[in-house]
Image (cartoon, rainbow, N blue to C red; front, side, top):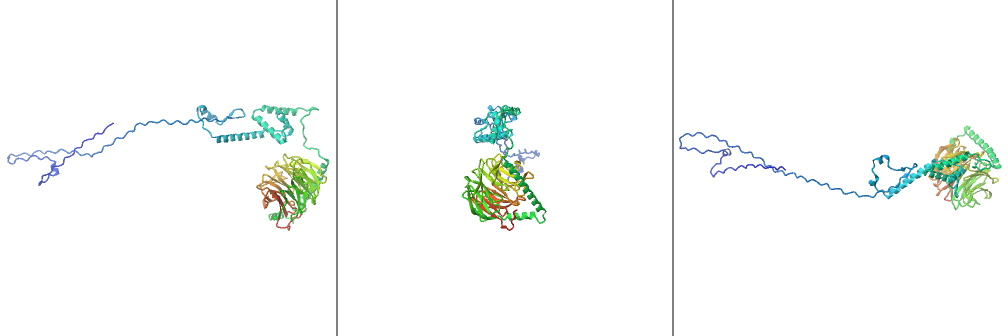
Length: 587
């Protein structure tokens, strides 16, 4: 280190003090040295002495305080960091095998190239909740892939082919209580499982065996695969009924078209004004009467042809007749051993038909006498409807069929299949040529009664269809479903014309106004019934008053009254404000 040296500074001496009585010398002369005075007695001249210049004074430097040395810190010593805690390694589930047998790892190839040996590194630990969520996600993905593979596989549709495929795969051809659709689903899952396990050879071999068996000609005496025809031979009475229905429908269709042409060409007829008047009246429907109908929930209701009687069915199995418009009880019909599911009046007289869960339908007169009993269904009945001629009766059942009966003889004329699940609703075209059925398979079918063929399959609903009704105009069909919508189908275009988001719960019944079809009524489990315009299918009136699910609705022929029944055991009669002043004329 370099030490700083201090330079001594000379301190000037103070001037001499003059004695008392003398003047001190000046400051300028005090600094000069005075020579001694010469002797006056001397006569010799004395030369002047040489001038002696005083020495220059040393300059006074300012006192600078010493500067303290800058301390130099000692060299720092780096302390070692504390070691990280060692966590136990995480046990990962084994990778899922893929179709080719390779491990389905979550890391990509680029990550694996730059990674080091897993044994030399530590992995982060996951919580138990995260592991459960991961397993649930993987299981959901596996189920989704399984369903995709299942729907991508080609599975036979014929039940005999399904049984043959199960036998070739070494599986039981049927299980106890197994139905055709369940057997086909079981075959589908077996094929998916074999495909996932990589046993494609077994599947291909079974397929080749089927093709070889189909290509091999069957010799006489050998039992080959049975081929089922698309039709069965009908009775002679069915042929006669088809001929009679054809004649009746031709006459009815001609009358309907002639009336439509006459109304179109008549200058005095204003169809738009008439529809506006009817829709205005329909918007004035109010509650006219409310009456308890039974001790159990009510399931169906129907007006007579003249509108003077109302019939109701209940879960107690009893059928009751009520006079209109006072809704006073006239008669009680008892004959069913299970709950009654529907009731319908004949279009030509006051006879009525009832359906029940005891698998039978019965025909009654207005006095309460039992006329006929229609037995033959294998499961409970849902809805019942009369043919416009009044000579035939249609019944829908949970045995996946609907049947046509002769009212006069009580004979079963037609057993019609076509739905993969239970058939719930049935109705007839105004001309009598067509019948429509709907079921729990979310499908509606239109049948030609003159030929027995299914001419239309109306697909669009995503849940079971519970209500169906033909419009009097001849080309519109309404269906109500559990998907809370009512669809209007155009039979001419063979497609859905309009979708009405009608209710907040399932629709139990739909019914067109029976005279001209100017408006449509729907009943729903949201405790309401609604009236809709048939022109643009907009809501006109909401009939609110029930406290439970509304199960059925019906409209009188002149369109002046609407009846609804519900699970709150009440009958409610709704009437428009005109009180019959502007009622439509019934043909």
